[in-house]
Length: 158
Image (cartoon, rainbow, N blue to C red; front, side, top):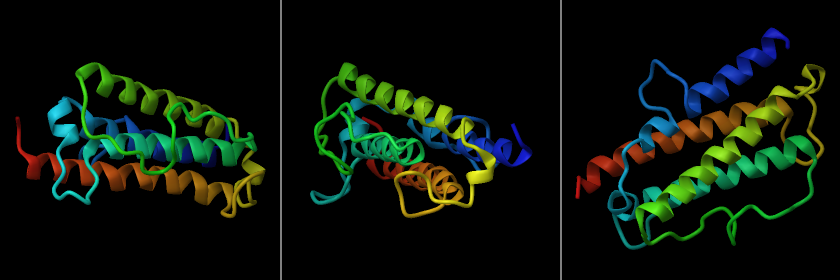
């Protein structure tokens, strides 16, 4: 594996679940979140933490499809992008967190398998370069980690 690919994997890892200097990554921001916290909305038309979990998983799935050229298949949930989540049990929340984790691991494996010579070319499905897709999914994780941290503080503890 080239140093360039190692660096991209480092970005993906620190944005999702590896120690980083900036504070909580996506998985860290979700640590200890209860179903009550996950379902809380700052306003009726705004997304909650639970929807951010599923949204992040969905875009990891999309990035994996774009990197690998895989045809559309079942994401694991009905719908796309923003899938409404109004609450549920600890088991329901855990199932969506497992979906996020599984989708991340699948995407990470695809990133590790990228041919470094293709980083500045468009992947089989997608309009951005492979490099932009990989750095973009890491940025997406960090963006939503920050939103989750804010929602936790605004919503308080149950």
